[in-house]
Image (tube, rainbow, N blue to C red; front, side):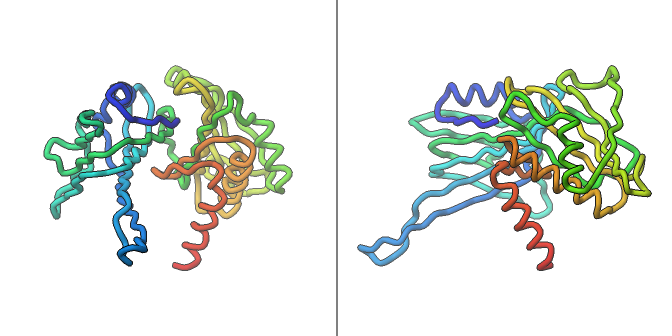
Length: 272
């Protein structure tokens, strides 16, 4: 989900939608300063500042990761004393005055931004229960089309990639979020350790913000090259087939950029 924030009405929507990020947690802050070369003076001159704040928070039985990108920044404060964690949020305050947006992320003003406009990107998922097995990886896709992948589609894609799996359906219980449409486990056919220890849990859910679909892939078990390959293949095929955004950790990645992001990650790991 994306939303452009430019005036007081947009700020009211933001606070209503997010609950003011109450009890959220700032996971990342990125400050970008652009400079352009001025041929007249022969020097570089400032050409704008952008600040992006990523927040993980929970509201209305959903876990949300939001990136608020503030552009045209004219004043800001990002301050944290040694030994003090200022990442936890209470509830943010906002204001629109003289054509400027103002965001106070904490009462002390240690994270404060004045800007021309802001852009919200967000991925939301239902609460999921913990499992006894170790969770090795989690990949979430928020699609923009009404219909997403089916179980048969996932199995067919894995068959064609030479990674056949069986499907074990998870029965719905009273604690299942109402948006969940189906869920179950993908179990590799040729993995002697497959079963409770090595498998991928898939959870598909319907519209959380009024449109689109969601899909969560969770890998459980021991470090296993085959399971990593299954996750990689499905993520690649899903982003090619359906428009939408991925969530890895607290990083939101446009689906069209997934392949490039993954290639950079592989290169970074090989370089370490």
